[in-house]
Length: 543
Image 1: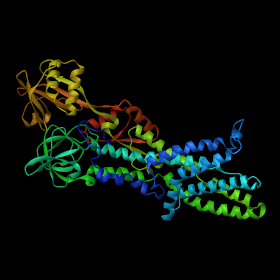
Image 2 (image 1 turned 90 degrees about the horizontal axis):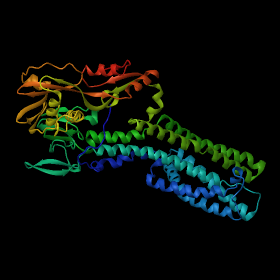
Image 3 (image 1 turned 180 degrees about the horizontal axis):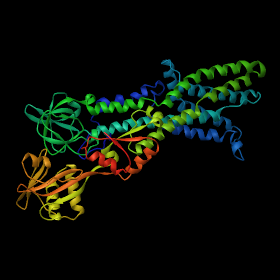
Image 4 (image 1 turned 180 degrees about the vertical axis):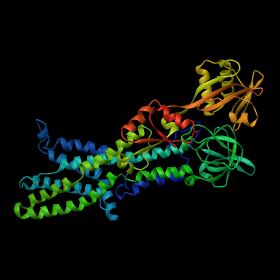
């Protein structure tokens, strides 16, 4: 199903649902104790400061001489490197230490404890090595300043990428918020008053004028109109609404005016629940992430045990200095440099590629099971098709083509209906004469009527002709048909349909090549679905 979450042209509020979404926005972070104390702004700042501090530590390291034909060390350079390391320790390591505390408090040692252990031993052992080398002049003890600096920056980078990915849930919910109007026309003491939608309550009576968005879920109590529900279905055609019809907040009213009684508002509404679903889905980790967390938990204890064994074994053989160095090396090796960067990077890259194709990954666990897919269920409108109507056929019964187009465009110029806009665009493309209609009125459920040059015209559906016993020859074409009438006689008919995307054929071909059966799931009429399947030139099941 295609979901259209683009902001509409009328005025919206980016804060419309803020009273119930801000807590949920970060709910996924609270699920991981180690990430609970981080936020994106703080992470960005710490990351870039850490990069700045890492550079001189690396440049002043003796290891530079192993990759370059020269070394930048000088008398006293170790003190500068140590100073930068101390600053890096307090700036770059703090988020991980806070995360480790949270994991220990929750009795769930995992990635944060493992990273913190690596940072602690590399930093404090390096301080110990520098002091021993500079003041006690013992046999040279190797420091781990290089490892400490690179470990800190790499892990910060990994978590920054991961947090960027989780912030996408907030972007999606912001788009949902933008679908709602800023205020609602509430009926109070037989008068209409504008009220912020955050103040709306169930059972309130709200008036929604033509072209406005519905502020919350409700039921129509009076009026007749057509509603654009494409945000739920992806279908661009309007749906008839009358007394007792259900309304979903965020959908767009057509040309009529409706009074609705609110049933669900705020977090309980359709958009509110969808918003919470989007946020909660981001907390569900992929199979790879789940395994990584489990491995990190085991690795934490395994690393401690192995380091302790190494210390005990080497202590009587080579002394305290060598044994300690070996133990520290074990703990550094155990720190998940690659795992901490690779997993978030892969997840973020995958989600970015999916987002570029208009795909919203509801649950990251689906990523690991995607290779097992056997069937691909696709909505027609907006997925295989463009989601926009266009004129595909024009039938003339009386008069000429340009005159008929001109009359249709004159009646539809003031309408926001997708079918009407398509006719106006088609008339402009074919340079039809520009005429103006007067006394234009909407015929809810039928179409539109008005006067052009003192002649009364109607542009209506076949339903109008049947309801008013007007004889006509049905147009045998796939699509939505509208008839132009004058004096109860049909003078022209226009057929509109949703055109196939240019990439649809290749898309279906690639699915079949990978052994995936495409299935078309659509609420369109029984003729249009098989026609769409045949248009792809490949076998496609429809249901």
